[in-house]
Length: 256
Length: 300
Image (tube, rainbow over all chains, first blue to last red; front, side):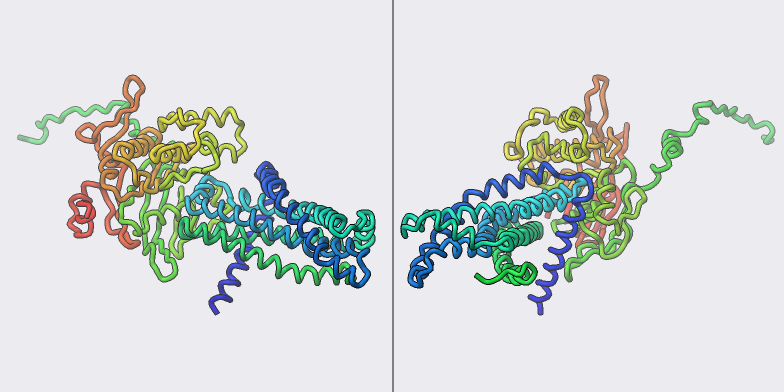
């Protein structure tokens, strides 16, 4: 019973955190400078790892699927297979997992350190709401930057796929790209952008909550950092299933 | 001798004597002064099954320093966290300037916190901000222009004798300097209530004395009401026996109370397991026969 109670309690706390951050957006002072700084840290800072992930994921998809497609004579559809997998599924999920590892841990560690060194209390004592000053800018930055990072990962994945298809399997690049163009639909693109919006929210609220609820000194900071990454990653994967199902229904996305 | 022959002394009352005394005049001019700055009424607080505060009641008058003594875990820091609204009591009332803040929301507490300053145990400076940015934090949040901020920060850093640290980062400061920057940050915006949470813990005696002198200066020269949480008897000695004055050269000097002046605006309360076991003057504390208090005074 206790784990269920804990889960419901944490769910309630996270919901309240998000609600207060959302309400805070409509009140002054607004922390626009801090939000832009976070966008830079989260977006520009995560770009190299997300691009690398996208590039090699596209490459390995071709590496694994091309021989099978060739066996059935469908190698001309290789671009379509890579693009659809990347845009619908792998791009959003892998980008979210990479950002969860890099940014989720950083947010949780930073806020956790501020809690144990009483900086959060000091902030409140000085008349600043930490949720508006610290949580809201990070949530907004994640919600806005993760879709952009996902698009970048998708593009680099397709480029990676094209290079491997051409380099290892001698497929003409224009054949690959034509297959990509005919394979993806507007619904795929919309779905591929909607998913990371939710993932950004999940990573942001879990890592902020874990950071702000840190107890137990420096050991506690380590614990909440690990928890933030693990819990956010799991929820990204769990939510991916439900969001995919919902998008399939709402956008009427057909199978490959 | 018949009564009619008794020579009655002629009593003459001057106009100056007829005028109300300074205290009465202050109360007439500022009726709010008679309201306590802080008041606790039967406050209870528990974490899970552990009682942290058990029916705590006390008042802090305007311009008074209340020293809260007690061992670690006795509920001292919790008391000031309750005043700041960082925690909420299970029952009882907390009043600040006569206003019941017990059930204030976070938004309402932001307004109350504007008139309070808090000095944390380790300074709690923002690591990523310079000394200037730390001290100017409250003003910058209020949208005060940069020039006014700088002037006010320099004034506060001068007050704590740390003007040279203006551009430094917290990591470059010693423990004592961090506490003094913490005091400067707490004093920006001229709060009428300042709370010190073990500000001398872990500091060498001369630095601890400097911190106490700053608290004395605030009490005697700035008319600030304060709560000074500590477990060190040295702090009690300084705060309850010395006062600050300004000499002819405009310098602040510290003198011992005695025939010339006796401090009445500093009182002590002692907490034990969340209950007040003593409340009164330091002299009364030293004469108290309670074995726990005797042991505490002797440092055992």
